[in-house]
Image (cartoon, rainbow, N blue to C red; front, side, top):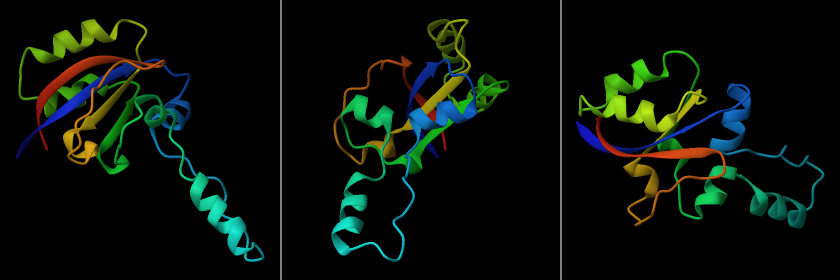
Amino acid sequence: MNDTVHIFAGHFDNRESAHAYTQAQWESEPGADATDAEYAAWEERNPTCLMKDEFGVYLDSDFIETIFGEGRYEYLGQRLTQLDALANIRKLAGEESNTLVLIFSEALGGFDAEMKSTSKLQYCGQFDCRL
């Protein structure tokens, strides 16, 4: 089955810092002694996602992959259907990049969204891929 994927590249100190930017983060859940109002406030604040905040669009984290370190381009190459796309992505990502972020079309929930570079990620484009 084929789909499309938006590909981003960036540099992070480690896998944890990459995930802290690209994946949903949750505060600790309030204890059993929390009031209904405190619990509701916690639900309102959570989860947070810095990348999603920068895009300002709906993103379903179930359809986002963060790939850090060695082997990221080999993995990506197995997913892409356009043979020449990988070389172009590597060029756009640059030498400093150590992380790829894949945002599959399902992550957008059917909404129109303009994908663009963020403060931490270079947008490399939209490509056809295998699921």
